Length: 287
Image (cartoon, rainbow, N blue to C red; front, side, top):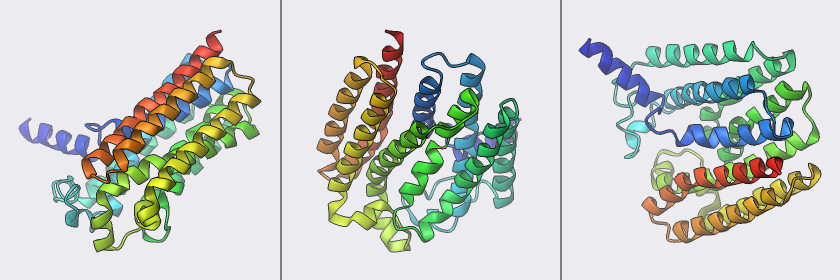
């Protein structure tokens, strides 16, 4: 029993269930899409499908990320104690765990329509290949934004059987947001990334990383405002965007110091930015 508990604990940490920020950053854009696609009245079954699917796919993605970085993580202070990097979990175990989580997520999607199932296959490919993009893409965070946001077109497809142009605009907003918050995250590991030779937006933008982060926040909020105008959303939605802009300015006060703990705090705080946009969206449909 003690051995089983130890294995489960290792798997939990490998899936990052003890650090739910990634789940939340995946979930908020998906919820935005579900509410927009349904004009504020999403099917409860779909909410549960996408909620559970988000948890499963984020967990599978974390396992695959650690598998891809298994030779790098031991050389990074923040990641050297991860179960795969430390040898607590084997490579074979990691692959089986990632495959099992992906199959469970696919089983959920099978309850939805054919278009959503087709999109889910592409979503899986994006999630599984993202960890390897740090070898050749100078801004892998842009790819992350597509992978993290692919629940958006899937939500529209599940609700309406089609993916309208506004869904792709929403995905674009998520790409800008992902570059912003993951650059904050990457600033924590920049020195280690330079030593081991992998790409990140913090390395690419260099001393202009603060400008890049704030530009991406501005582009995200402008694109969300455009989406709101196209959908004729009411004033609470736009008020939510203004509050989100205030939160982005707060993040600026944190990251401009370039202190690692402050940058990581800004990254974590993006949960509240996503929640604020969702709160404004929900209130807009209520009135």
